[in-house]
Image (tube, rainbow, N blue to C red; front, side, top):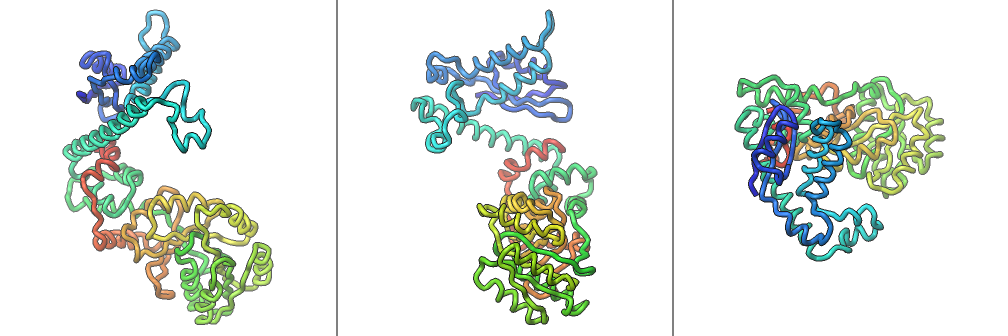
Length: 438
């Protein structure tokens, strides 16, 4: 297979160049917008004879694509007119699927029962076609990996400063979509000293935070989140901080965890130190009645049970808390030591109740703080408190005053954990960002 890159002002011109240079049998591997127009990666010597042989009397994949392009052209073409932009777009979209796994037009996976899809998505196909499908899928993955590597190397050569910025962001764990936002906001970097300083300043600006008022004015707050993220310890820190400034007479703690063994005793161990009473609520009705009795207290903190974001009963249990949403502020507790995918999933599932903000815990245990920072930015979820240890109440900080501190902590985590970021990782995850803004 011979691969070549074409760039022109618009799609019609670049496709004409592809046809003139590589002939009508050229295969479009990818297309994207770049500075100066449209970039198309095309290839020739793509052998479909084996595919047509496996399909028997059915048309080959290329025949299906040509028919679709002709239909699009006829639908938008007037007498004596060339193919319209819509037809060109249709051709690009169809041709870009050349290396996707082939499938019969009358036997798609979506048309089969779910059990059959799970056990054998292509069980009705012959062994030759399944082998061909697997081979082409592997070839497609290999080509995508090689092309992303070429794209990254080219971008790094053309803009080494920006490439180094992306490497630095990757080392602290910033996701590609958030890195894209940061490089969009950056001015051209001319001084090597700005390679760290400028992007980190932009990152600090992007972190959403919310002014902490609960420990100043009081109120009713509940910490929700997965198991083991530090909700009970954080409540102890909050209660101790408020007691140091206002005394313990106006504080009440509520244990709404009826599932974990010893949950109330764990909270009472902290409460006894500061002289605060703990109330136990085993149901939503109990919680409502307890809150009615505690109306005279200025600060009421509710420790809820840990719930996995994949718990089948999560929706109903959150709905039970939601019955008190008019009087309770809910704060989602996120562990900075969690992976980015788990953090995003947690935010999506726990958003079923109105969130007043987040508490980011276990900052001292994280290998890369960029994961939780990316989650906050991506979901526009403001951080209210940051926690970086077990000391009560010293290791609890108002996030609005600690944005730069959090970024500095991300650098320290990177230096201590030493994440392995190589050029292959950058090519696979950040090549699109570098191409778009190199």
